[in-house]
Length: 74
Image (cartoon, rainbow, N blue to C red; front, side, top):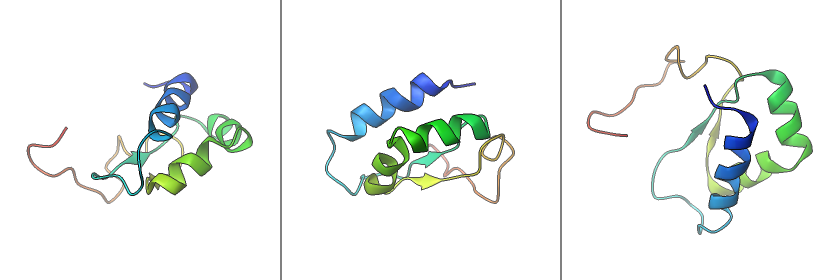
């Protein structure tokens, strides 16, 4: 599981990339508390500008959440 520091670090990387990203990026914080904190810090805005898909906190991506990973993707 990722922690909130991983989301902050990813946002720092995204600040240096011209939108839109050349790939799909889905963001799903592990908890609602983390989501709230990331919104307060403006991190969610960075993800939004980059074109990332912001998912519900929790196991939404772990559980599939109606999405599929393309074969041979990372």
